[in-house]
Amino acid sequence: MPKKYGVKEKDLVVTHVVNMVLTGKLRSGDRLDRNEIARDLGLSRVPVQEAVVQLEHDGILSTRYHRGAYVEKFDESAVREHHELYGLISGIASGRAADAADPTVVAELDSEVGQMRGARDARQFGVHAKRFRAVINSEYAGSRLQAAIDSSQTFIPVSFWESNAQHREQLLPSYEAELVAIRERDRDGAQVACAERADVMARTLLGELVRRGVLAPRVGPLRCIE
Image (cartoon, rainbow, N blue to C red; front, top):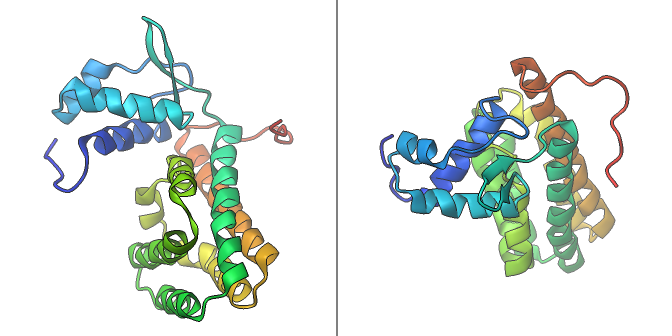
């Protein structure tokens, strides 16, 4: 695999493993072949091991002493849980932004929402959506919260959303609602907008995973996660 400059080797491995899970090449309980991953990516085992540590921390792999790394349970509830956590902890930063309602921050967010409305395609929309969140996180998410936000995004693949033609139509309303809530100092409204967007993202990704045959269609109601 050609080297991607500016991207950490560990992150390449994380992306590769997550893609294998999302395409069904790795399934719940499968053992990760670290040598095969290193060979496929043209890397040493060092970044592979670093990726395994991160993926275990993110709840995607589990390691067993002297037995290797295995894919944790991957099903509808796992996908929903990752997105639910993302919505909740992103909402913490957005709630802080609403408490402050800083005019400079609001103006930056308003500019990004305007760019999202006029985006030519899903990729361009995604660029400005990412900047919208970066404005909030840089001001109102400390290092610990930012690390948690990053960790919760492992099962939110950028490549999927960049190729989703309905990206803007599905997610723009929640960004608009979040902006209004922040401007009006509506902490609860900002947090609800984040949670609702995460739910839309989870349902959209699940629909695609079912279409690909990675997950089976749901039979009966989803069991609540305790």
